[in-house]
Length: 178
Image 1: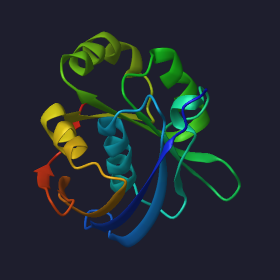
Image 2: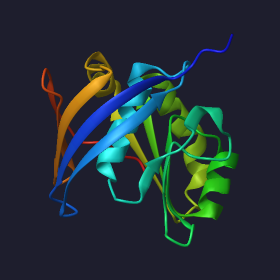
Image 3: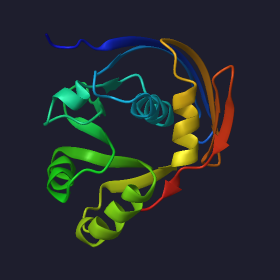
Image 4: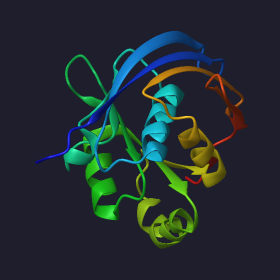
């Protein structure tokens, strides 16, 4: 018997002073059976950092030809492709060929740093690629606040993120690698 996804509801209030974006989003997010709480919360964080009326979650882990999030234009062109984790150079090349802008969010401990050392010289040629790292202390703290119903306030100013999940408040700045 196949395991089914866990459905999570998140009310995300975003105050992004860097982009002048102020919006409330009521999101329904499916957590794949193999997806950790940490990864789900990083997906929500990535959504908050790039929130837009056209930004959406994809099928994610269950689909090889889609990112974790994307923003498509009204004419179905991929404007923004957001990957989480440690994608291969081949996957990044494909993404950069399909989307106007590609952003990778790495997270976790040593494996992300090792991945970056191995791949950075291969991917610097992609002009539409950005790589950012979220420190493991932040992602583990985000994961500890995971619930099936979330009410989150995210404030962004000068690239500094304040995440207020009611029981926890975190302030951090994603590290820009590329």
